[in-house]
Image: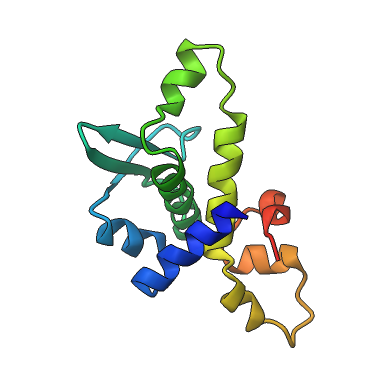
Length: 143
């Protein structure tokens, strides 16, 4: 639940659940760049400066989700270098990636947004698609 609380604090503070706007308010530079198709994006913390890199080849919804995921890293794992850990150590980054996914799901599928869908017949999977969240991780939403 601590991730949901962290998301709620950000949304209340900045009055938006747009990850690009929150990153801007927090002085996190978002760089859209042409990357290999296997890379959606990544987060870097360099000398107290924060950067989110997003693959410019992704569609709009994918870019938004990627920014939300990487924003999650900036909020939850500020100084952890997951690409380094993944490729140069035996440390499993599964938990860190799962937490960043949970952050992105809570941000993009915020409770207030879902309440607006209360009178519809949409499933959580349908709502995930509506808000640009991959269906495979929609189950991470906490109510």
